[in-house]
Length: 430
Image 1 (tube, rainbow, N blue to C red):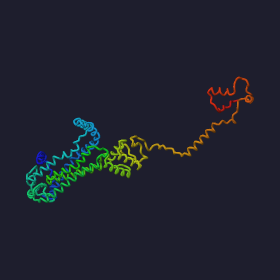
Image 2 (image 1 turned 90 degrees about the vertical axis):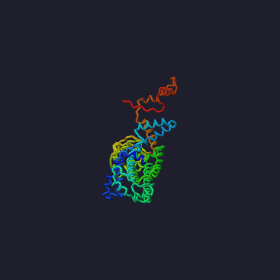
Image 3 (image 1 turned 120 degrees about the horizontal axis):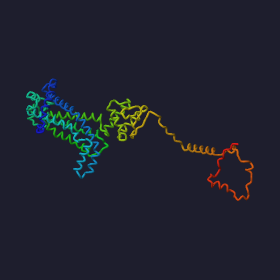
Image 4 (image 1 turned 180 degrees about the vertical axis):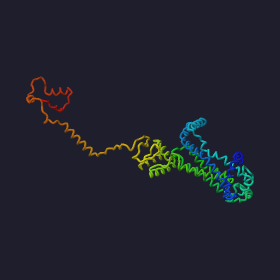
């Protein structure tokens, strides 16, 4: 650890300068030789570093979500080239390049603050050995060696002997109790941060080996912190515990307000958003409009929680617009339905479906229409005048004319006329 800390000694001077500046402020409040002044200086150093690392944290979130999106494709590549590791690696790198994703982006915050961590370790180790380092002169060194946090000196370790702890003006029991409690808190906060990430903010619809690896890390990292923690000075434990608490709070904020699509956190967020929008009839800020706009634009690609959100707004008489606004149903103009199609509402009235008739009603209507048709087709001979003279109707047919009875009827049938009663001709004008 001393070798690694010496490698980052180039940043030791800036870190020690920042600690001294904060100590000068807190020393006026709590006293220059107190553990509160030096402890709060280390906490303030952590907060300053983490604020500067917020852009990297945002990039880490985007990289983690991009990696989750690529998990199905990565699994296909692993199955396709499971016997050719070199080709598998080439295809993986090609996939990362095409999607613009870097697996190391999720480790950027940890890698970025590593130099500050080892520089602080180098400063505290110098205080423990009584050596001036950076901008910490002899006067500040003597003040730091007198500082105790709950009875444990800043430079004391869990593995230090009783004689070494006595040289720092403390008792071995106090040092080990304080360091043990801080190690447990440090490991517990690390475990909780990783656990809430895996249980709340992971897309549950994607089951890949990547998720299994993350679950393993959830248990491995706390154990690593506990093992290395017994060799950290109290000041470094303060630093690492503070950064873990910051990470946990930051992660809770992201999970609550910007959850991963398809995760349990998204279901809880959309439920809260639906209740608020249904109560007030509008969104609160631009971020909510952006989320609704994204959900509407997905169309058929919406997940289960997003479809439930749209259905909840519909039941409340509200419609989500493609621009992210939420309006009442009668005032809506253009609406995108759940299947991705676009319809117009609030204009012409909806087409009503006819009522379904019972069997008796259908039979009675059929009988009535049949009777009506028969009445219309029956000829009314009483009102029709015949053009033929009365003698022609009563004249006898010739006996031996060579034609058989019914021949006329057959000839008419053969000429294409219909059999049966014919529709009477209209009377001719006289």
